[in-house]
Image 1 (cartoon, rainbow, N blue to C red):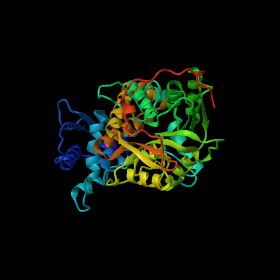
Image 2: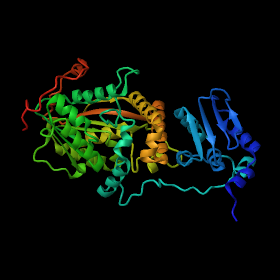
Image 3: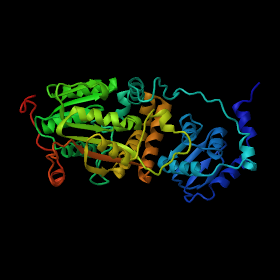
Image 4: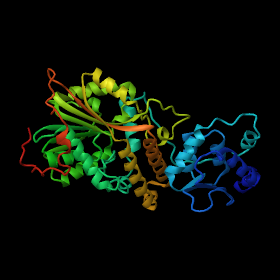
Length: 443
């Protein structure tokens, strides 16, 4: 017969485990946390720790000390081999430290002992994304998008703002609530695009329709949104109907590469979709948007960028369990391709700190409704999203990733009809007068 779980634990000397933890973490500069083993033995800060890591299975300790990576540490948490209580973002900072350390030399007694730790027999209900087709083909992109976005709408509703805006908010102060910050972001985008009544707006990757509704309701535009997520499209259409904007907005389930229109749009926005495009298809992306945009029009592109100096060590947890085929590129790469495709770069703004704040709001709201989240989506999914969003907040805080608003113009003989200053973006930070759906006829 094989070893039982209880007999395996007895084979792991607690004293050795504590000594191993101490030898690895003795030089970690922040000693404000605690690690507890399966038998209750503790190491580290005993009173009021900022966070605690509870090791439930020796395999988790092996992953932490032997050859940690984003994937192995993340899976240990998701599959309940360890638990994280307290400040999860601070725990992720510790994980960064473990990953960045040099590997344990093969000749050390520590490695010899760690190799005796059991590998375990993990059973997962969340196997990660299973995608078919070539990278960034239409079929594979559709599967990747639906893997991420087709979770129950009720799950997202637990922690997003009332409009279901799943992208970086805009905080005028750090103490602003999430709903206000997301409304300000929607209005900020409309102001950057300088939307006017009667214009036609395309939202590439429209999510649950928040920008479409805001732009039509407050700026009098005709708005078209496209998404690959069936569930998002269903919710967006219902919200448009309830807002009384069926005559001004519509949502299509469509790949941006397949969208055909009778005449080009005056303005195009892409908010939080750019991360799915991929470096190999950047040129195709900008060329396609250029064809959909009229001469003299403007294109607002909001997307996450990776630092040009960052090099990941080991496989990515987020790639496997959250954003399959997600592809972050440095901002200079994005701008170079956009310019090569004929766009003129008119404004670039970093909202890195804003995204860290946004993610912390999301994490706290998710944690506050943990039981509901697990009931709706399952324990593993709850843990995946808690970890992913906290890790993303840490990534923005440290500058590993950034969020850029990029405003691009499509000049006509050098003219863009853009004012000399940005004063109109900031003159009045409240929403403009509501425009009646009947006051501006559809073109």
